[in-house]
Image: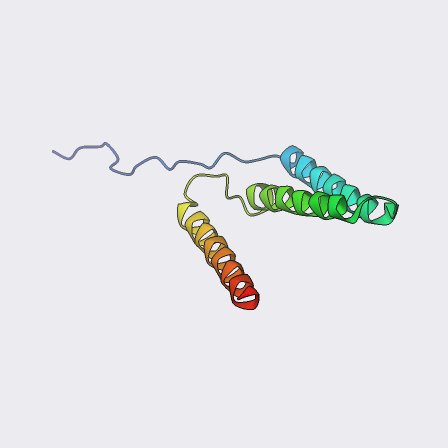
Length: 104
């Protein structure tokens, strides 16, 4: 006798993100860009403080871009994250080596 049960596994569907998260990410990116632009355009602010603001806004912008637009917050993206972290480590090491070489 033949068994009538199907041997196929039910397919798992990915949870679909609506446009709300993308709109929030876009607004956050816009706000970070406007803050950075305003800090530079102000002109009367201390340049060291402007550099700190620019670097801070850039780092936050990187995390927003990677998590929302590149979907690195989702499951199954371990290898790209490892590659990005390794790349940042290599660049950081090279900058320190270059600074040491110039300073020495």
